[in-house]
Picture 1 (cartoon, rainbow, N blue to C red):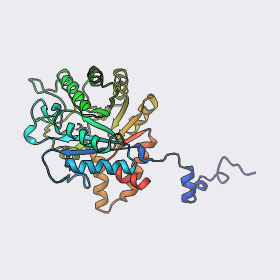
Picture 2 (spheres, rainbow, N blue to C red):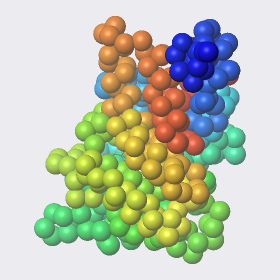
Picture 3 (cartoon, rainbow, N blue to C red):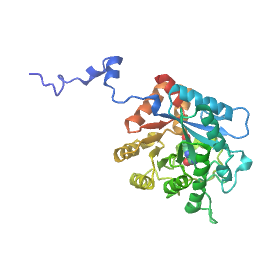
Picture 4 (cartoon, rainbow, N blue to C red):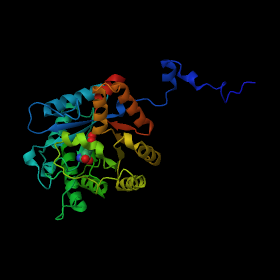
Length: 330
Ligand code: PBG
């Protein structure tokens, strides 16, 4: 008698016979609504500036940013995460341009909001590194160490100016202790209870941020190892997660994505809030560079990484390919 639980009765390949069959039994499907487009806008330029380490990604002018937002929304992308790049001369030790009500990021929030209204969830990076002349995510004490609590005061102010500009979601990415709670209080104090917080919960100190440093013209020398997490660790992500939730995070994020799918799966298992993953600049650059050399099938690799990130548990994925992929999916 044939035993169906083992070969030759059982033949898993039957469910892979053709594209229609594979499509039918697929457990993971990508949808444009899960995608969020990160976008850079630079002050004082009249033409977009190419980012050499991220072919296809630019530092936008206000005008091309508006167009990119419209294009993303039409493709069905749900959100846009904005990063401001101030003029070099405006960088200082405190990152003052980050809390200027007319600073580049605040202008960008207003411009995108005026263009697409509520058709896109408008998100903003809440961090000082784009605005400080030393490139760190916070302010420094006399010894040159990033001063956690002094930085929190700057973040509270940033949250308020971003909310005043009309942002829907703030994304604190600086990995300071207590940042989510301080930002929640700051928002509530000015009546912005409806602005939500996407907490960069598990943000690892990663070599894959390299191209981003060019994208925001970062002044950083050294590294962020005293505030971003050590790639060797799992448990501290769970601890950061518990803290962020207790402090009022509405959504949580794991970043980078591909080297941290185990963390993503753990976080997704633990929580009852939406989970985002950020496919970062270096993940983008690796695929684009290998594809340019003809070493990899670009489109297939993009879809495979996004499918893997979703399969691991992400509800939302930030990816520089968001618009392109959304167009392809719909
Ligand atoms: C900090 C921030 C960074 C990224 C997003 N927010 C850089 C860093 O922490 O060094 C990286 C995003 C990417 O690499 O695509 N403001």
